[in-house]
Image (cartoon, rainbow, N blue to C red; front, side):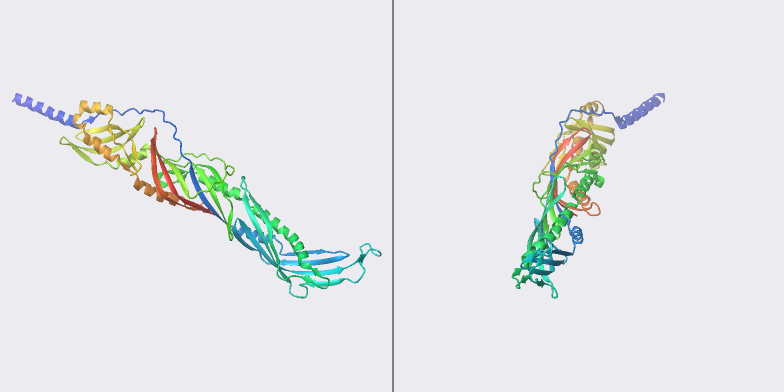
Length: 467
């Protein structure tokens, strides 16, 4: 009886030991991160051609108000022709075409003239006509005579963002000429001279009004606005990092001005918000014509965000190894090992613990896939398994982790296009509206860094600004 009791105790202890040893943790140590010096990754400069549309209507209204609607003038001579005139203009008709903004001033005039063939100063220092003066008029006690005047303005932009305009009289047409037959005098020529002189003020007013257009503050406001991190929701923050700007020639279409802005910048997307450094608005660079944009955008994805992406691909999955099932509970990236990454995988079942693997991230540009084709157990994990749980040293585990760590980026890129398009359209402020569309977004390279994976993308599309 005692012998039976002794054997029973031994059996019980054996079962307990077996149960305990079968469920115990597999103890492995995390691999050391190899913080080797990584060469500086030079980002390609991105170029954006941004057509800008400016509605000139408010500026033209100011010009219209600043110019007098009536002009008067006279010249009195003892001998020869003396005259006085009155010119009344209609509203200015503005029209733009190509490099010139043109405006037509239709109006009407009245002219009083008198003529003295010979003058004497014998009895009067001011002189007196020897014979009675001859008088004539145009537009007096009759409909005023019509005249049409046209101007053209060419606008340039200086390097310090100022508008410089040159306005010239391009047409002076007397629809109803004034010819004085009584003393064979063509008043049209004199009228043109006088009215043209008076309308020189209009040229100055127009040039002065255009020079007052505050283009610097508008461009600076856009510059500072795009220099700030832009939220992309779950994707992180977009930092445009503008570097240089240039503006093309101003072209007109009716009452609208068009010009092209070229922006060079070095954009990056970060998964966490970082303090941005805004450089002051630089002087305008030499303009080079281009179409649309091609942007090289760096995405700085910390390994925690990559962990969330790949962990969901393996969580809950099981594999059977020598009739023992284990379940994968989580998978992630632990650290870097030079150009390789250290991955960890938590598992449970007959055994539980954490395994560490190492692999080289490889990018398939054609299919837009990141994978770890050479993934294998880390040396420390391999030694620990051979000592305590050799059956776990199986290709089924490395294959399962390798398959889970395949990241197909096409769905994420498609979502990102929608997010970027939504974030890069809308009203910048009360007067500036931005429209843009990304038509293609592709990853062209990946660079494993110590604490993040830098994903370099190429984006193509177009954008425009309306003022």
